[in-house]
Image 1 (cartoon, rainbow, N blue to C red):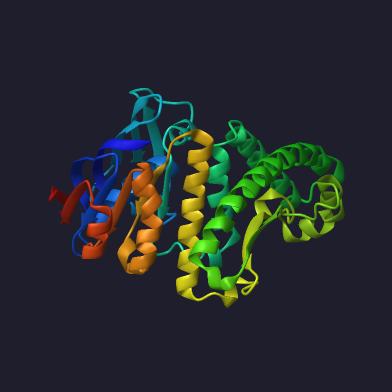
Image 2: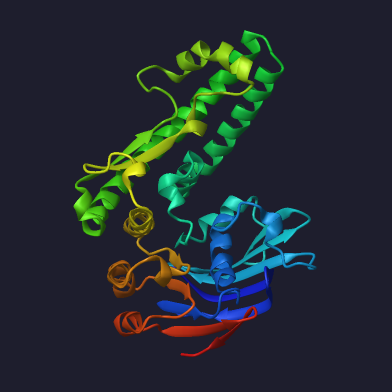
Length: 359
C-alpha cells in the first residue's frame, strides 16, 4: 500500500500543497516549524481520523481558515482509490472515489498508516487508552466486524453509565447488561487473538533491539477478571458502579503490558529504551499487517533521526526499505550515513508549509 499523491489544504501552516510520492523512501527535511510533521500528519489522519500529535481536532485547521481538507491517491495490492477527509464545523466528512461512505470506518479500512514520533514512548509509559487505541487499530484491519461490535459496545456502555447516574432500578440496568456482555465478549475475543499474534512479532523484535533486558513478554488484560463471567462481575460491582456513576469493569478498561526478564515494569526502562520499545511495537504491527494482508501499511517516521541512534535507525529501516514499504520520514536533516544506507528515492526540502523536490 502506498500514496502516489497527497494534497493538503489548511492543515496547520500548510495553505495548499500537493505532493507526488514514490512507493519507497520519501524524506522531508527542513528547519523546525517548517511544516514537515504536518505532511506526515496528513497521511496519518487519512488512516486514523486523529493526529499522532493531538486528540483535539480543532487545533488542526490553519488559523483563519474555515475548513481543513486532505486528499490522497492510494494504491493497494489489488486496487487504487481516491480518498478525501474534510473537517468542517467541528466534524469529519469522508469521501472514497467521489462518494460519501456510510461512516468514517469505511475510509480508514481503505488506508493503513502506522507511525513513530517523538511522543511514541507514551505507548509504553502512558495511559491504557493509548495502548487500547494501538491494539484496536490492528484488530480493526483484521476483524471485519470489529467496528460494528465496537459501536454496539460503546452504545451499551453509554446507556449503562447513564442509568447508573440516574440510579435506575436493577431490572432496567440488567437489561442493558445483556447487550453489554455480548458485545464485550466479542470484542475481547478479537483483541485477544490479535494481541497473541502481535506478541509473537514484538517479542522477536525486542530480542534484537534490547537483548540486554532478557526475554520480553506481552500480557493482555481484558478489563475484568476472566475467571468469572462478565455478567456476574457487573452484578457484583453494580452498587459500587452506582456510587461512582460509571461502569468499572469491561473492555473499556482493557490494557496490554510489556515486560522483560530484567525489567518487569516500564518504570525500570530509560526513556531511550521506551523509544526502542515503541519503534519495535510500530514495526511489529506493520509486519503483522503485511503477514495478514499481503502488503505493507504506509510508515510515517517523524523526527526519526533525532530520536534513535544511527545503528537503530539502520536496523529499523533495513527491512522496510528492502521489502518495499512506503516510508515517509521527517527531520531537520538526514545524516550522511543514513543517506548512504537507505538512499531516499524522493527527497523534499520543506519551508513555510511548502515542499521543494531535491531528489
